[in-house]
Length: 446
Image (cartoon, rainbow, N blue to C red):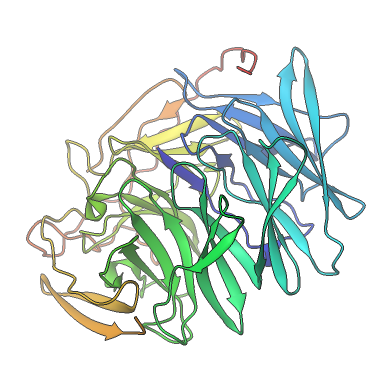
């Protein structure tokens, strides 16, 4: 499985209330979030790989601060980062009967004024966890759990870094978006070679190029760059290690929804050597709210799905068989998962069978833009330097989702059928809530 949560950049870290989302392990087995009860914040662990999802509260001796971070580990424990007196303290939480056990791991201090520290996305394997400390002139990668002793400094990268994407299945290659010399470029940090840094994206000399998501199975990457439209970031895709250009299809733009922000948060795994077939889940935030977009590189349209009520925004998991699972929490269902299969046996919106040849250029040394014109694809290249299926289970809502118009809130003719002609999908149907009583949560498997 491939899963992630939309993480704020280091510059966005403040004392405001945390986002509604959660963090999910790479294998999709566990999730963790800060939940609120009676005006107080406390960690909560979700188990997602059993017959039904369930949550375990892990309150400490006192309520947590809003800027506290939590992250699930592969063994069911929850890593927590607390900021106290300018130091970042780390500990592992686990249920112990009626209470919460806590294993202190040590602390990291950021002595530079204006420096910040946050947890990086969950690492493959679930045994280690990392943090990124960002200072005025350099950034540091810390191993905070899984080492031989306390937090360990692994790498120092010149420049201010943000993001954080794992490029392999062993947790060795970490991609960061580095701001240096007034430009932002994605770089790779090799954690097994003393933090050796090498460039990853160079779409154009004067462009800002960020890596948003990567799938190690297929090599599919999602990037954000202003190379096609200076001053405006566009969402594009490419293949890691390929000599083909990064492509910026029109299907990833929302011209009818000005001000909308599109962020990929999950990619379908298991599509070895077929990145064009990978399903990509995107969180779309606009003036009228948030919803989910589902897209594949080989398609010329995006399927727009209304988010389930109480969706933990930006969190989700793709399974290998093409099922998208979104965690949600409401007053009636405090721990639930909504599922849908956009490309199941019953078909889905936005599916096309055409495939186009992207051409050739240097390795990540250019960009290509595609537009659908009457069922045909027109491309221009710039060369730089070098109906959903229903899946029901305990604690899950049926994936009865439909396309949604982000401007008018009704059905949108954004999809294409297999002939490339516009289609008029059915009006959206909200997911049907199925409150399921939770069983008493067992103890963690430590």
